[in-house]
Length: 419
Image 1 (spheres, one colour):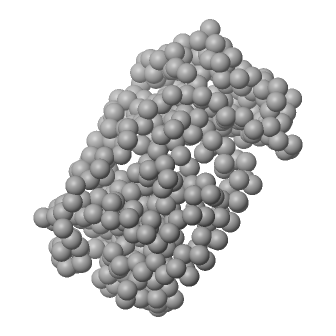
Image 2 (cartoon, one colour):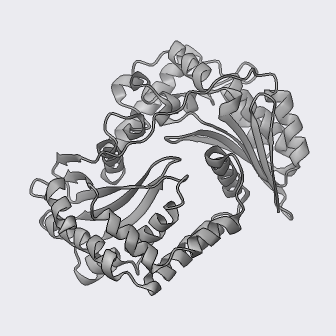
Image 3 (cartoon, rainbow, N blue to C red):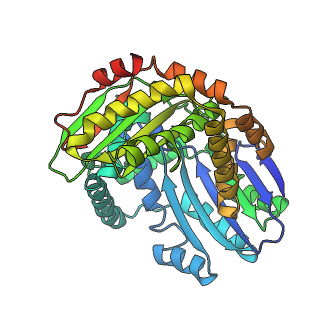
C-alpha cells in the first residue's frame, strides 16, 4: 500500500492510499469546521450545515444526489464532530470521479432552499429531543460541558434547540464563508484509487478557490466541574472525566494504554472489580476522547440508585491503586488490545480514508503505522504507573443523571482520589 500527500497552490490538501486487490474506494472531504469552531451564537450550525448539504445544490436536487450515488451501487453520508465535518462516499473504482464530483458539489454549491431549511430544522430538533431522551448518550455531552465550561470545545455538537430554531440562510452562508476555505479542506481517498487522477480531479474542482486565512480554534482548557440532574429513572448514569493529553502530545499513548487497562474490556480492572466481583453495575468502561490539543479520560457506568456511592468510591480507589501496582501483564494486554483494535479497524478503505484525513489534519503528514505501534510498545508498566500517579492530583469532572440525589459530589471524589 502506498500513501501520497499533495497540496494545491491554494492550500487544499489531497491524500490517498492505494490498496491493491480492492475493487472499491472510499472518497471524502474533511473540513476543519466542527463544533469547536463555532461562536456561542452559532452553536449547532456546523451540524445544521452538514444536514443541508444533501438538500440540493446548484446542479443537483436532493433526489438527484441520492439517485446518482445509488444508481452505481454506492452510498454517501456525513457526520459532524467537534473538530471536523466530513462528507464521504463508498463506490466502485470506476465511479470514483462521480463520487469526487458529487461530494465537491454538495460542499461548494449548496442552495439552502428556505423550504428545505425548515424541513431539516424539524429533523434536527427531533434529533436533539431523541438525544435528551437517551441518558447514556446525553450524559457525555454534559460531562464535556462540565469539563470545558464556557468554551467551544465543551458545547454540544447538536446545539441547543433555541439556537437551531433561529438559524437562517444568511447564518449558514456566513459560517460556510468563514470556515470552508481550501486550506481547511482535505480530500482523502483509499482503496482502488490513483493518486495523480485524484489530484487532477481536485485541481479541477477546488483549484480555483482563493486561498484565505484560517482562524485558529480556541484552545481546549480543562477546568473540571459537576453536572447533576435528578430524575426518576431505572438506572443512575455516572460519568467521570479527567484531563488528558491531546493527539499532538506523545503522552497520549500512555493515556490510551492506561484507559484500556482500567476499563477497556472484560479483563480490565474496573470491569472485574465493579461488575464481576461486586455486582455494582451492568456496564462500566473507560476510554480516551482526544482532540488535537486536549483530551479527556472518561469512565462511565450505569448502576442502581443504592449503589452509586459505592461504585464511585470503588472507581476512585482503583484509579489510585493503579499508580502503585499496575502490572506488566495488564499493560501488555492493554497494548495488544490497542494495537489490534487500530489495525483491525483499518482493514476497510473507509477506515483508511478516515485515518488519512485525521492524521493530516493533526500533523499535516501521514505517519506510518509502524511509528504509532512503536510508540504504543514503548509504554510499559512504569510509564503507566507514572501516568496514573499524575492523575491523582487532578480535578475530576462528574456528570450524574437519574436517581442520583445521594451520590457523592466531585469534591468528595477528588479528596478520595488524592487520599
